[in-house]
Length: 202
Image (cartoon, rainbow, N blue to C red; front, side, top):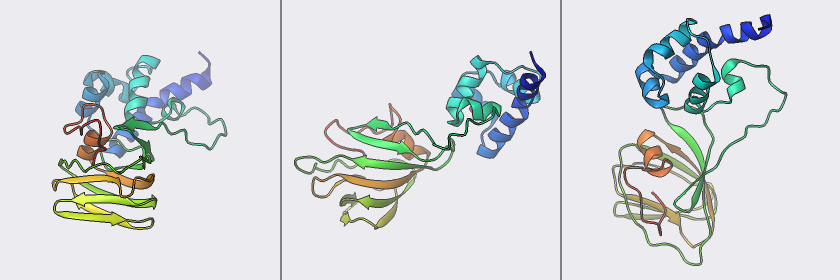
């Protein structure tokens, strides 16, 4: 192993520890998410365990960062961020942030339909903020039925029954901030309150 590669690997542990602390994640939480034991993670961060691809891949997925960024490899000069869209319930969520364990930002795309869907309200713990980029959004929040146009924003407690959809059947683009419960309900498979197949989540 050449000295440059050895230096890169030696720096992985402190980088991993700094990243975990920056994200506010405990070793126990990280172990539960990655499937790597807490003792192995501790030794890896402390430099007593050599970084391997088998250990780094689940960490890169959990932190949602490229593998080369995780190990501090030199950048290739490509400034683009390669975002992976998530398709759920007939809609597209494009992640815009990389902070597991806290509020995350998404661009949300509601496709055009021949006629608007009927609301299917749901509740979950958390708080959401949204900003309409294009189209006309229908937001049903408890007893209130609102229509938001491009440039308008809303924020609400998601313990109230709520639903998001197109107000007129046209496509809608919006930015949305989800807390942990919101991410589980909207983006992750097996969320606590999956809506029926014919309706988008709220």
